[in-house]
Length: 149
Image (tube, rainbow, N blue to C red; front, top):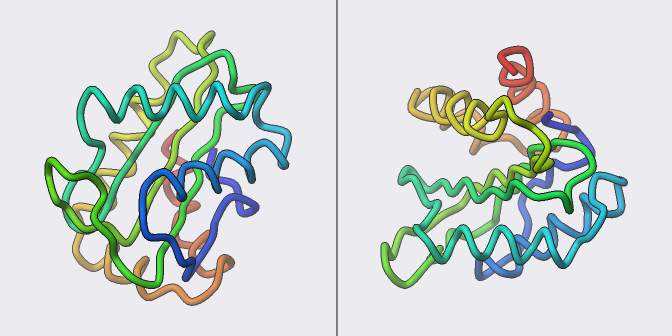
């Protein structure tokens, strides 16, 4: 699910909408979406229910919709942390955006969130991920999550 072509390191974003728009555009370009705007709307609807910021400088927005052709996990690391939402006030510097087709009945998005969270709770893993300077380095580290999915 984690694709090297959807890993972006040291990006400049100042808000969650910009990050979600960017990742959706890249996922669409990679052929993983049927409908980019519908996917964005699904993710933002989920964000309106409850923030996907999990602490530790990380957010895991996600969307389960028929707008997704192929399940994916994208990772973006930003140069400077920004406030994810105005409710939690959490500042994030790493974003994992998960897209899952509606037809998946095996709760794939929940398993992905669980596996990412398990890894990120580990301080040394999280710090190593934040230190990655290239997409290749980050993919090598994150690929361990793929093996669990």
